[in-house]
Image 1 (spheres, helix red, strand yellow):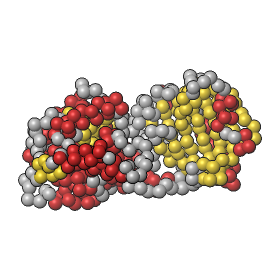
Image 2 (tube, one colour):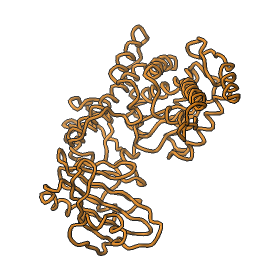
Image 3 (cartoon, one colour):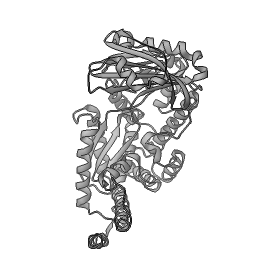
Image 4 (tube, one colour):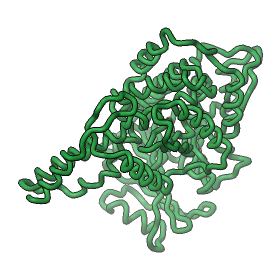
Length: 485
């Protein structure tokens, strides 16, 4: 009991601090020195967990150059701001306490001039200047203190005490709606003060709205439930509301050119050759094919399958049908055969028919059918195979309702038969951004077709959004645009 009262005394004694942005007193449980130390601790953690591009990479240097311009005109210019690029295709950006700013390459791909990059960096700097992470920490700490007091009377569940991990999850997933709107407002102000086009905030939010709508369209096209997008942006305010409020802040302000063509070309040249979706290490979807250069495999799906390359598995389904696929990797602890591994995975009473096995290329495989319960289909007939090589096992599962599986078995056989060793010449490479000068007679659909519909049936819409416009608009002849090849 005495320990808890000491915690309460320390909590109440922390006092108030002046917020650097609002200039108002606010109650927080962290001094500026503690804020900086926490940011250093979290940055060290992320350095070991995130695929960061090296500081010497030209794209990182460019992001840092723009970020420092914004930081010089923010409400906490005395802080040392550090800018990092996360090398994956997630559409996200976040800030840690004390001035550590992270932008994912997947978001940078959608920038079309330097002002749009500055808008995102200004938004994240706004989170730092307004001490949003410190406010979130205070909320979490207050909750923890309440839990500690309650634990005198009630037993507490394990795992409730790691504040750093809880805060890290909070800043990556987004702050409150009020905080996000304030960061948008600060971004507009910082852009204007730095000589950038403040309307870039509006343009970028419009692009994010288009990406959101495209994601919904693709999910509906596949027959999946359409959910609001942006991955870690999901907890941010509705994009339309942010567009309206950011636009309102522009009224009465000095207007700068809507698009800076010189910085447009600079931005695009920094993106040229960068991966658009996927990577050598994570694999990539190319139309109806999947390649994984690092693992050395490739396979093809028949028309009509919607394919998604997730962090944990490659998944697919026949559009608007209860027919599914999953390919995952399993690390083996002991030497085994493909047949032994497969039989350990599937109870004998569930197996239907014989267990087949053999060797294809570098893999030893085994395959069977079983009546099992699977995601989305409780009474499913599954076609399950394992592929062993070098202490790893690929586990491939295809399934459909038991009373309908005969209809889809030929396609299951086609997919399984398509698995082969990756060859760059034959199978293609990870999709990358290429530059193209718009010519008379060009259209998004024609350019999509020339790419082999590399991004699926909505490739034309993808390309238009990548260039900051709807698919029913086209750029002037001679404009340099981004394609995916």
